[in-house]
Image (cartoon, rainbow, N blue to C red; front, side):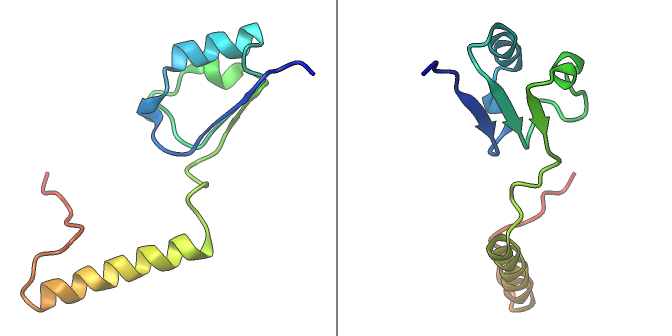
Length: 95
């Protein structure tokens, strides 16, 4: 059986060398790429979008009932911490 991996990234877009990924996809070293995150989401690589062996999803991989419950629990816990005079565990940075 021919070995052509499927590349999946649901972590951080900056971890992937997009140019190298495109080369791998075009040369057949990588058969497919499934990406839920991109290196620069405000400026998506047009060459990547045009490839037929690429699936892009809009940050959908995080979603599960467990992840949503955890997200809500962390938010509520931080609100309660602030109301009790404590620092939040997950503060929102001032810009």
